[in-house]
Amino acid sequence: MSITLIIIVVTVLVSYLAFSNPVTFEKLKHYPYQIQRDQSYYRILTGGLLHGDWMHLGINMYVFYLFGTYVEQVYAAEFGVGKGRLLYFMLYFISLITANFVTFLRHRQNPTFASVGASGAVSGVVFSFIVFNPWSMLLLFFIIPIPAIIFAVLYVFYSFYASRKGLQPHYDHEGHLYGSLAGFLFTLLLKKDFIIEFIQRISHPNFQF
Image (cartoon, helix red, strand yellow):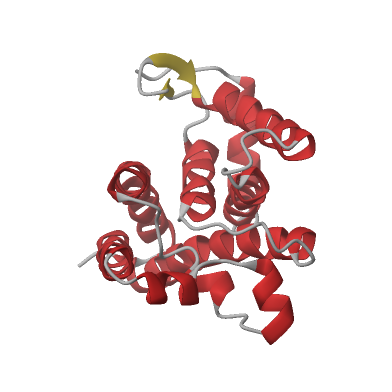
């Protein structure tokens, strides 16, 4: 079984168990104030396994499957199956931890902030995909076609702006932003060739539908 499917199965299972058990949900969610108070640092990880509802879970896992399957295959082709899968898992893990650790640092004195979801990690995988396919056409809001690199720029700009302005406080915009950047940089820095090839792709637009 691929790493992508293993992560999906684990995430769905943990989310499902928490849906029916509020105590488990409260114990595992990413709650920076609680982490600071009782040093429950495991929440930085487990918060990425929980979701608010089935729609939240379904969208995240659907997007993750679409992009993660491709990125995992590229990693395996570039580094060999065993090493490639390990690096791919590290991509997901580092993106998730980075996303939640940044929000922990900012909100650890804020008792009203909490978050759940794999969006930071999934964003990291999507931005890893963009390293290899900057001119692929993505569907913004699942409807509007837009080049992947343009989507990335808009996504980073909006996430930064929304986090600073406090827009949509129920969304973890900082987690989305830093998870994306973590995945992007992690992939670029794996091989010098990735940086060179990315620059070449950006310099020679080749729209892929």
